[in-house]
Structures are given as structure tokens and as C-alpha cells.
Length: 368
Image (cartoon, rainbow, N blue to C red):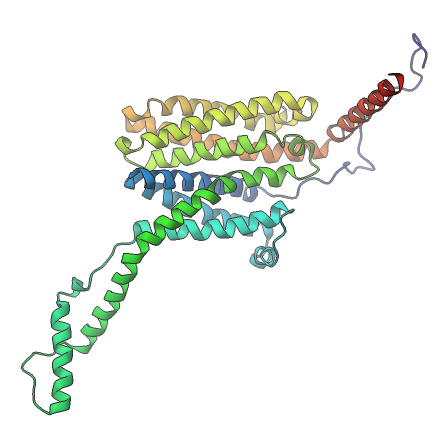
């Protein structure tokens, strides 16, 4: 086209093909998938907090974080199974391990992380019972058993009063439990430290899962989504620890919540500005409202967390705000993905821009 001439063909409008979008919309459902994303991330971050608290000797915070990690992993797995429709579908994903598939890696990661956090939580809440719980000293049980055996062999009556068999059997079972209880803390600490490895992966793998799709709002945000998910998970795990742990011992939980909120807010801001047109779904309609609400709740909860040590009311407000913000973030990201898949312009316009840029680059190379 010569300079100064007007185009004879009007600019194309981006419409669907016979009422169908250009790409298939995600089939993930609400509230199953957003809750799985929230619970899985919270569990991963809580396991990191529990490991650090264990190493630092903060037993009360470690207990809270271990239980939070175990409950989050178990409940998250339940919502994932509900999303899949049938439990055997999750089990079928464990039949093979495919490193190139985020779903396959995530399934194995969830199974390993759930087992580690469950063991760590059980070891933290289990109460070791000794054999003296029945009121019968172990020495008397041994003497009674030896005397009974001697009487049967020699035919002479024993002077030691026999202990009822039922009580001996019960004490033997309690002794086995006591033996397990002595081993359990060591195994639990080892599991908590191992969960420190699976925790960061659990907090961020779901970002890779959604970014490894053709959905524009997710795929183009593959750089920022892991940081956004990790920050949101750390903020929500810190919030749960704040709500349950006594204030005088919850200082590290408050610091973790503030750090997570800062990372989440920064990553979300950078993502929306960098994506340009593709980032519109994060700002418009229902997804935009959810994301703005999430940001307001997260920032407000983080500010309250800095002074939450002064009172229980401030702690409750901060923890609830951060939790609600993390949930709104997950629901907003899912809604934004569906909105971007439904509108063809978010798929077609970036493709044309990339093609035009490539053609212009080739033209420059030929000229030079």
C-alpha cells in the first residue's frame, strides 16, 4: 500500500467461529479447583514454616504449621479428586511418571507431600503412653510370668500373686505403643525436614500447571505466576499460623505473612502491566473485581500483621483478611483464564503482533 492511501478493507473484527471460541475454555470447576490451588499452596508454605520452626526450637509454632500442612494437603487432595470426578482417576495418574507433564509431576508431588506432612503432624500430636499407665509395674509383670512358668514346671504353687492375663496383654500392647511413640518424634522430624523440599514445589507447581496451557492470560503470565502463587501461599500459611499460635510465639508467622503478601502484590502488579492486552481479563469484569479485592485484602492484612502482636483482635482481622485475599486471588486467576479463552482477540492479536514483528525483523535483515 502506497503512502497516503486509505485501506479498502476495514480492520478485521475478532469473532468466534460459528459461535465457538478460538481455543477451548478450561473445564476446571468452582469451587473445587480454586480451593485445591489455595489448600495445596498453603500446605506447601506451612511445611516450610514448620521445618524452620523445628530447627529453631519453636515447638508450638512447629505444631501449628505441621497440622496446617497436613490438613491442607489432605483437604486439597479431596478437592482435586472431586474435580476429577472419580478417585481412580487420581490413582491412574500415579501409574506412570512423566517429567515433561506438570500434571504427572504434580500428582506424584502431592502424594509424597501428603504422606510426609501426615507423618510430621501425627508425630507432633501423638502422646507417648508408658507401660505404667495401668498401674502395674513392669517388674511385677515379669516376676509374675516367671513364677507362673516355674509353678507349671515344678508343680509347686508360687508365692507371687499372678497378674490377670488380660491386664498383661493390655500392658504388652501399651508397651508396643510406647516403643512406637519413642520412634515417632524422630520420624516426624525427618518427615518435616523432607517436606521442606516438597513444600516450595507444592506452592509453585500449580502455577506451572495453569501456565502450561494455551489460555492466553495464563500462558503469557508464566514468568510471574510462580512468584504470585508462592507469595500468596506464604501469606495464607502465615495467616493460619497467626490465628492458632499464641501471639508471643507467632512472630515468625507474622513476618512470613508480611513477606508473602509483599511478594504476591509485587508479582501481580508486574504481571498485569507486562501483559498489556492479554492482561485485560485480570482488570475487567468479575475477574478484575476479584483481583482488586484480593489485592486490597492482602495489603490490608499485611499492614495489620505488622501490629497484630499487640492484640488478639488485630491478629484475627489480619489472618482473616490474608486468608480471604488468597482465596480471591485463586478464584480471580481461574476466572481470568476462562475470560481470556472465551474472547478470540486475546489469542489472535498477540499472534498477529508476533508475526508482524518477525516479518519486520526479516525485512531489516535483508536491507542490512
